[in-house]
Amino acid sequence: MIHTYPSLSLSSSFYLTFKEQIKEIMNSSGGSCSSLMDVVTYDPHHHGHDEELHVLAVDDNLIDRKLVERLLKISSCKVTTAENAIRALEYLGLGDQNQHIDALTCNVMKVNLIITDYCMPGMTGFELLKKVKQESSNLRELPVVIMSSENIPTRINKCLASGAQMFMQKPLKLSDVEKLKCHLMNCRS
Image (tube, rainbow, N blue to C red; front, side):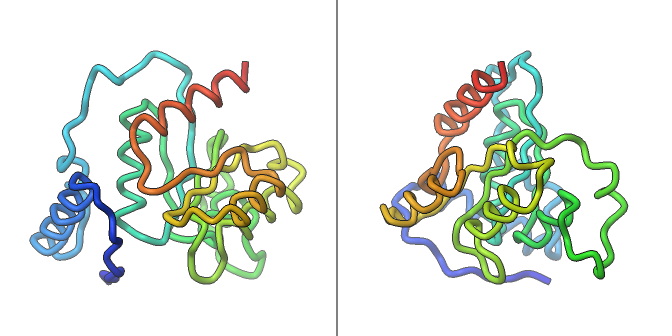
């Protein structure tokens, strides 16, 4: 099922072009996004030989999620995506024990970073941050980055005070992802 999301009022022509190309691919393929990564040209000059980071990217908006995924892959990161915080918790092995948890949960590769949208239905990115930081001794040290298209200082301060590594403005740019990756690699050394 394809969900439509309200258009964001972004001035970035890249983002709007990217959004239109995704819609075209989805319409021509009956909703399948298997060829989505062909939309943006891969730049082999950004392919590094650093240790690969595994990032769990969480966003309820398909277009934003695919954009973040693509930027992370260009930066040589392994990426797992989740369409909401509940799915992210299931992937991390923190889901409701009464629900069916995918077999992948037991064999999850070590996640080095969670990057999540702040505003999502059901459970916000802030609530996801609190669950990771407060309810899991195994994941407490896992860096969590919150993203939002809204620049609200009280929200930013609340997330940082609750353990977020960074708060980033959407839409993300490649330079944001490279800066984040560099920061994380320095923190892990």
